[in-house]
Picture (tube, helix red, strand yellow):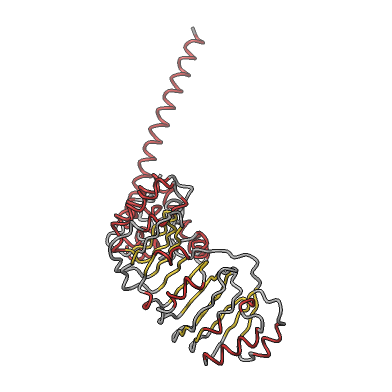
Length: 391
C-alpha cells in the first residue's frame, strides 16, 4: 500500500507542477503582450510620406517595372503589417509599372495580379511591359483585353506582339511618351495602325512595325530602328526633323543595295549606325549639330578617313566623340591623326545583343537594384524585424 500511495502522490505533484507552470507561463505571456501592445516600433512612427518614399526607393525607378511577386514587388509592403498595407494600398504610384512578361508565373496568376494593380494605380499614368512570347498564345488576346481599357493612361510601352494583336489597339493615347514596339510578322495581311499620341517623343521599332504603324514622326526627339532596310526607313527619316538622338540597325543584301537620299537632321546630336549593311550611308546625311557618332568601319569603307572628312565638311558639325566599331583596315593612329580634336574610341562587337531597356527588362531592373543595395540591406533588416514582431 505504501508504494501505491507514493505513486499517487508523485502523480499529484506532476499534475500540480504542470498546472502551476502553465498558469505562470500564461501570466508572463500576457504581461509580455501588454508590453508589446504599448511599444511603438520606430519604423511605424515614421510619417506616411517618409514610409511611401522608402517603398518607392525599394523598387526599380519608374518606368522600369518591378516583378509581380517576390522581394522587390510592391505587394511585399502589403504583407508586413496593417499600417503598411493601408499606406501601400493608398499609394497608386506603387502600382503603375506593370510587367506581363514573366514566363515563370502562370498566366492566370499574372492576369489576376495585373488587374489588381491596374485598379490600385487609380488614374495614374502607366508603364507597361508585355511580351506575347512569354505567355501561351491563347492568352494573348485576354492579356491585351485587360490592358486596352487603360490606353488613355499609357505613358511608357514596351510591347512584343504579333501583327494581329496590333489591330486591337484602338483609341487615343494622350499620355504616351515612349513606345518600344517589336512586331512579329505572323500575319500575311498587313495592317496600318495610327497612334494618336501628342506627347510621344521616343520610339524603338523594328522592320515589321514600320510596315504596320504610323506615328507622329515630326515630333519625335529619339528614334531607334532595328533590323531595317534603308528603303524601309527612308520614308520615315524624311519626316523626323526634330530628332536629337537616332540609332539605325541597318541590314542589306544583294537585293537591297540602295542608299539613303540626301537627308538633313538640323537638331541631331548623336547618331549610332549598326547592323550588317555594308553600303555607306554617312555621306548622304547632313548633321550640323552632331556631337557623337558610333559607326562600323565597314560603313566608312573603302576610304574610311576620306569618308569621315567629307561628311564633317558637308555637315559643318563640331564632332566631339567618335566610336569606330569592328575596326579592321585603318590603324587607330590614322583616325586620331585625321581628327585630333575628336575623342576617338574603338569597339569590337562580335555579336549583336538586343537589350529591352524599360522598364521593364531584368537587366534594367538589376542595375536599378544594385544602385540601391545599401538602402535595401537596411530596409530588409527592418522588414525581417517587423515580420518577427508580428508573428
